[in-house]
Image (spheres, protein in one colour):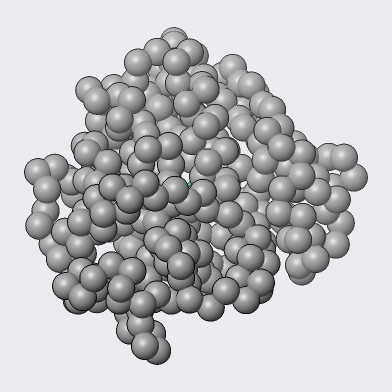
Length: 323
Ligand SMILES: C[S@@+](CC[C@H](N)C(=O)[O-])C[C@H]1O[C@@H](n2cnc3c(N)ncnc32)[C@H](O)[C@@H]1O
């Protein structure tokens, strides 16, 4: 179902205002926090620091903090908006703040165990960097969609780089859409959000489709993590199929994903290549990192997987493809 929410002019909801104020405060304090993998986060917390010493401890490492870190009025405002909650003699953030270049992007608290957790992590940095490297070589797109936008990182970067384009952040998770809208407003960019299962909830064709879908086999089938299919490639392949059907002539699909490698064979690419060949489009495929999330190989479903590679697929539809 089409469900577009304009994020401009600003909507003055409680959480949005509280997050905008918090973003201003942390930026003014020179806040920096690169979000790490859950495994690294856990290792760092295991060192035993119990209470936050600074803003990065509170909103990056998600440690409890005392009122003195902010001030009483700010803590009351953030608590009323649901951004922080009471924790012992202090508070704990219900959202984390990542830095993406000069931008602040709010995403779910650690650990991200809830079914509707909103993702931001090392994959986000690799995905956005690959988009930034690829974008200058593409024709200027008029209509752009980020499938599975999560906290909105790629959609926000695209909206900033393409101020005249219609940019849509789409996700199956309503909490992700709400955070994307807040994060876009904080970044000062104009985009729309759409509740959509892949492209089912939006109409028309796109000049540029980008996606960083879930690619793990997740025992709890969490939407931000579970890719389905034999080795987690199910959603990435569904995006290739949906993208090929909805790209405008000359349009591009930029897909970042994690490919399970079984006895040196890339399970995603071997299934995607015949689809791309049949569609008559041009494509480029590369491994960005040969070995990510090695700890995942200990999980059910990975007995035959020797590594997970972070990969980057760029597809260009022929300019003469039928519209
Ligand atoms: C790994 S997260 C990536 C989020 C964001 N693109 C990023 O790079 O930080 C995958 C996102 O895909 C969304 N998702 C999962 N299945 C989906 C579907 N069928 N349709 C749309 N979005 C979906 C999840 O809710 C989640 O926000």
